Length: 443
Image (tube, rainbow, N blue to C red; front, side, top):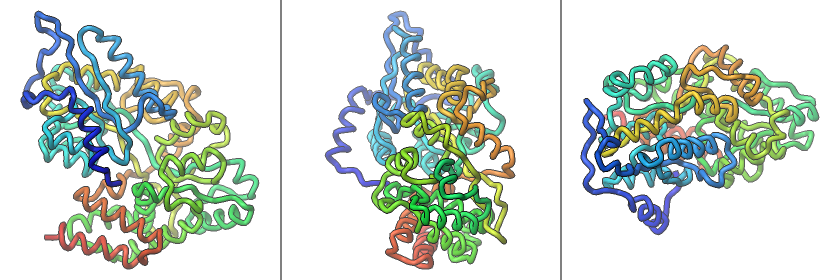
């Protein structure tokens, strides 16, 4: 994660804290407040924190979120009002954690599953939603896809509500593939051959961001899983395995080899810049989650017709090639909010039929409820993603989000950046992760 200057951070906090009450008391896990039923009918103000600019972003999912806030404020005009607090993704968790530490946690905020949500829960900043979801809002709970709360549950307590679901795959430019005379690769060897032919045809094979480390570590994590399967990550987390295992070295060596086919500016490019290089036709492929569909189609609507999707290739002699990296975007309610009813109303607005249909039919992401939607209205890429998911034999999270702590994930991210930049070898990079685990995890 990028470092944030104190000046920028304090400026953000000054804005975010403007409506922060120092009199907040913890939310009861057994009931919700009646913040809309006071005789005075005072307007209840809440904040929602998000990692993108709702006003200027061309990303279709972000635009959908903006519409949710607009509908909510109109629907509950005079009763509830939500003010978004936004920042960029790279700085999001630094600023969120600063607000949590200051005692001014936003009423509702977005959060990734894994260590980031672990930290929020461990800090006591997340409200237990179980009594609400399995109590008076049982019908709402039953509307969600079976199993969707698994990574959001701690000791039997549901601590977040998902808004959408996405899978990581390889997007490709069908026109550039045709020009170079290459086909969709199913194996790593075929993928390298594809890259060689694209490069020989004067086409940059892959767009990737090393300036946004999780982009690199997502790619590296896929290679680790394709090489060694799910047991390896589980073993190192439990202290029964080693990051120096041959399968990790095999996977990361292939990651390093593939990185030779990234765009020349990959070291400094952000995720947005790398994605733009793809949808502007400067690179033939992009390894990203299906959340990129809304970003691609929102910025360049004409690109949809030539944007194909394929599953991350297999490694010969490796593990199951049909496992998919997946993740959800999730809403957390602050344990300190004084306005539970307003927060629940907002979270329900994100997951109602109108919002979930938009998620699929416009933004190209997968709904988290059983809502019926018209696949013919949805972006073509969503149909490709769904067909790939139908063949999936299992799922995994981001590698850096599947480790015991955020620091462990950061260590993995940084090691992958160092390997890509050539400042260390594959063995040296994996030794950095191994050393961190020995010192901090395997105690």
